[in-house]
Image (cartoon, rainbow, N blue to C red; front, side, top):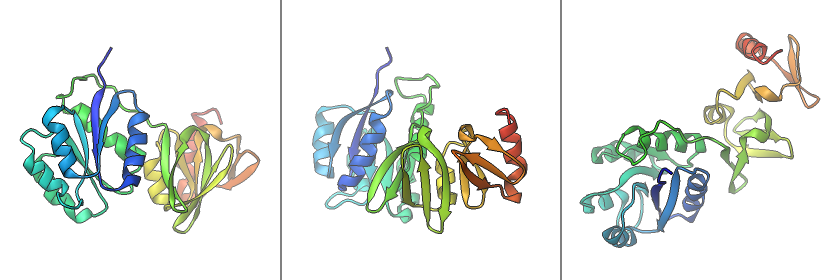
Length: 236
């Protein structure tokens, strides 16, 4: 049995711990072994314990993430997280694996973790990739995880998107363009400038629209050719 990658989270924001810990727990290749809200506790832990992968916030009080890396003689492989993109360039000077801009969405988390496995320095040198089961979006003031296999389609409302699932609808604070980047392209496709559809959830198709659970979704001219080809591969 392959040994799980020992992960630690270092961030002064409880919301970041919630999101990252949930992402880690979704993946059998990863194990969360320690959480800290400041650099001092992290230094103490790493004096006596080993970790394979560290998710580290840059902008923390007392000791910043960059300062923590400077203090560690042999830091774990590190993925940096922050809400401020201006820190990105400086962070790469310390040999970090990747840089995640908050809010961190699951597909981007998956990509960063897979970079860890691609280094060949983990105890798991197999090419197994972390699978994407959920997408995290902001609804009102909360970040929630929506199982990807329950999504039927999404509809744009400016800087918001209605995500229609098999059980309920969500109004998420995200643009359709950003949402499209975070959904697995093998399962979802843009049907119109305002709509993304789950390919396997389509019940019917004609030249002007597709039908999902009795809802007619228009097909935009820009997306018609690719959509038609993809749906033909699914027996339409």
